[in-house]
Image (cartoon, rainbow, N blue to C red):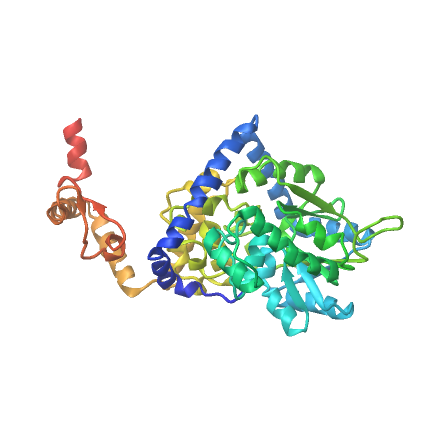
Length: 467
């Protein structure tokens, strides 16, 4: 997927003006946020479970090379082939080579964000292989001119039922339906022939388990089973190298958090542990199984101040709760991973110079850190990226000048107190008593919201009066 993060500001402005999108994004708070809050209360010791998950994830990451070797050995012992790709481009090339080796003409896919990193569909099409997305959300996006996902769990959250109904009627060439069960049945009817005629199934991997050489795939639709145990003779797993867990016990611990944080469910509808190709006496399963494990910038975080980002379990809770994401959606971020997690991952994987505005796309309110099931300190990581940008002179000139001026006053307490006294009184004059609708030096703020007008007194003055 081509990086478009340099256009963040323009895209965010467009999304803020899109009233339909604003309405659609309310589903985040009414479904995912409320659902998570309810689901975590089911755990006897939620904080203890989080701490255990952190310990298990970091044990794997801090010894990543060791556990990847264990996984490779165990997967190979069970008949699978493990391939490592340094870059996303290398990973796409490997999958295409596998398809060509087995004479594949059609590949059915279960949802995978790593395959978005790889631009896998484009690579397959260029090689004469038809890729078919089978996750309902991804299928909707594919038939809508290969639109990119806007969320890692609910890729089509930015659309409403009416938009999808119009799309189905136009693409399927059938009468327009508006009943959701009827619409999903229509999608199943369109996808069933692909399931029965595909040569290769491609899935992501929520985790790979070192001790058993297995991949864990978690879904709510069951399409991952259709991609792996039905007719496809080849199963290819594409996932990041950081997804390794040492043991099945580790996986069980993390699974107590993943569905609750992602969709507010106690457990996902389908949890598949897939180990090796079809064996003697097996009635289903692929004849060949491959793992393509992608680096794509991940090892560059190992041992650095951003290493904690690698323990992310891709639940999407940070974006569901982020006040910025809730207003602009995922497409504004310009690459595979949106929201707070994307604002760290995109600069880390693709280069900080290609995502200048993403570390700034946060209020640093800390909500993402609070709801993260593995307690990734996202606000701190975003702050560190901002520091790197300043150190590398990547921020705009006026911004650097403004910070220099502020620092000049901040280092001189008396001058700072005088400036703030003048400032709050000027701001009070600009307001109508309660709010400021137009702020000369802050139009980017007041174009979309009103700023509360100060009382005309500084914090120190108010605090002194209260005492």
